[in-house]
Image (cartoon, rainbow, N blue to C red):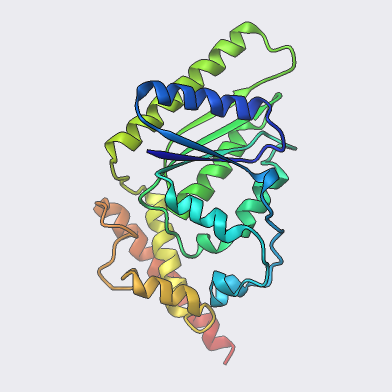
Length: 262
């Protein structure tokens, strides 16, 4: 099993040490290969907001940096640990630049065969907000988020807090290892099904505005009337019904908007 750690910390501090503990626990459970990608050592330029990747595909991005190599590492991994300390109640600037640089994946998700573990450390507060944000990102990109660990690591940390943090890390590591070893498929929740149908309405109705997205979705069969989700995973019939209603409403709204501009 290959695990890639996307390290959003600019230094090897609490978050890095927490990732190493996860590695140690997972290695004690079986054969696993770890790679740490320190975003501080990678040349990722800020997104320019030109929309070229959305409209024409990521290969048309005018920025020339290490993004293709990073994207390949994501593809090659079986599991990814998204790790960022809390900076100003959010992820670090390094992690946000990474996410923005790959924002086209929000339109064209692709990591449905991969698992994710979310990791953050905070001096006092903010760990839940960061974990929730990372879960939104990883989930929409296609990852099956199987575990998350948010640690509070204040200066002069009490021994009781340190033990609680270790328990959190050990639990997350075991859950992550088990999910990777078993290879189980995620059954989508209601929110994920709604996102699928909402995106399908958008990229089908607005094919001229989003040709790369439309081609991507059509190639994968996601625009077929019978498609229920991005993968062949079983979808709760009630979720499917709600998703199709959302899609119907979205299509009507888009068509009315297009008609008003003609």
